[in-house]
Amino acid sequence: MSVTIKDIAEKAEVSISTVSKSLNDKGGVSPLTRQKILNIAKEMGYFSFHSQANLKTHNIAFIMSRHHIPIFNNPFYTRVIAGVEIEVETYDYNLLFSTIKLEDLKSSEIPSIVSQNKVDGLILAGADINNEMIKAIEELKFPTVLVDNYLNSPIMDSIVSDNFSGAMQAVEYLISMGHQKIGYAGGPNSHPSFYERYKAYKLEMIENNLEINNKFIKIKDEFDQNMGKELAKSFLKEKELPTAIFAANDATAIGLLQTFNKYGVKVPDDISIIGFDNIELTAFTTPKITTISVDKEGMGQEAARKLFDRIQNPEKKSTKSVIPTELIERESVKEL
Image (cartoon, rainbow, N blue to C red; front, side, top):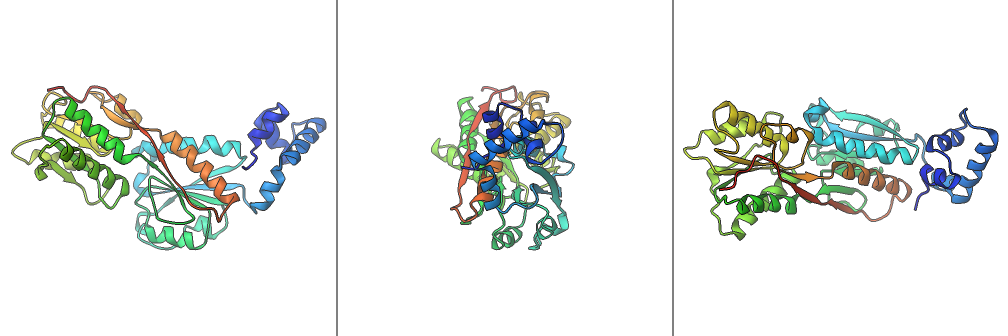
């Protein structure tokens, strides 16, 4: 197991900042304390770990597509990044943030931040990043962890939420509240998270002997920030609305809520909505949105831990970490 500056700080009974200054030969630390810290670091094998890992930059990068920029358009990833930052500090690393241009999403060219040797490892977030690009990075055997995405790779670790169980829990909750005409609203099924949530929706309906009405299933083939609003308008074109909709993410749920409200369809009086992700905004909408919570900071921390382990052990077998979910009951689902 790798030794971190947090480990050294605890043993030396000093702050992480003091350890960092000592190891990087910066001022603000007495010679006696500095030498004590260097001795402890040597005893714990800290320098051995860093030389073995052949670290050059002390930087790692968090990369996502510009679909999610400005970042507040997708607050899911702001919390993931916060989790990465927590873990990065314990390893005395710098976290760089980069994006992939929309026109480059279908390219297999590796990010310049890799080709220019600016980082020691990558965290790639989101399933809208081209698999060909990911495979090109894999061929370089460059330490990389995928977040909210999965690739069957022997050397790339993946961090995902428990999409299937969480989605089944969402639909099961709607059924427990008396709903039988339940719709689905989501993004492209080429995205692993959307696909798993869609499959779970259908399975839960089948297991409860409920009809799956194709007119109540609305899927947007291209992911964008207006997805929820566009899907809501599609529902409104039908002669009949479902009594409840499972929205495959909270951004979609918020778009549904806003659009239904605009056209005089009240939530939850006329239609119920449950989301997925538990982004902060769902606690401040009117009504507050019932949703499935994902430990986003936990995903970020796990991603960082896996990446540092991968940097140290580049040939180790890959793993897929599944982060559990939790139902958050609020105000957007009416009991029938």
